[in-house]
Length: 242
Image: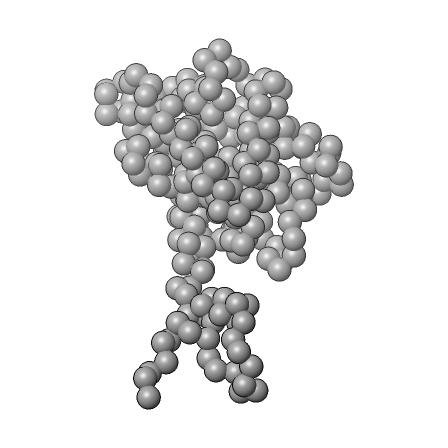
């Protein structure tokens, strides 16, 4: 008697013919673990989080907690705009003074793609528990949760982009001015050369982050879109003259 193919569903004890649904369940049980990308994303998040300058982690957690307290979609979006403005006004210069060891565009591409992809993946919420502690990953995300995760992903993206810019300037023997680097990162993230830390810029970044999440509801599309969109920031930084 020929050995049963391990990818086939097991024989039904009641003698019923295997259905397509049974086959899919059998394949799912034998497929590689789905939490591998999640663990990879979680490791990247923990690595970046552990390198935050003193006080910045607490600042970001406080901002995320405030975002999660929003009681309506309008309030959530307005809060996200406010926190983005505060991030670039008060937090980003400190991040510039403590750059990550992201010295090449390739390293930056991989890191932002992983983080942005995790933020877009509803199935990978457990990878974001470092950003939003106490989340029940079995529940569907609410808009306040979405904007909180989006803010965390944006903050990390800005930190990675700023770090790459700092190393580019240092390698070229140029001075590093935190305000100038912050402006460069904002230009890269908005696609505008004349941008300043204004309510308009915060609105533009808010729309960008919510657009990423809106794509995430489309299976297999959202993660790729979010990763590609985040890599645009790194591409813009890499093209800037040192």
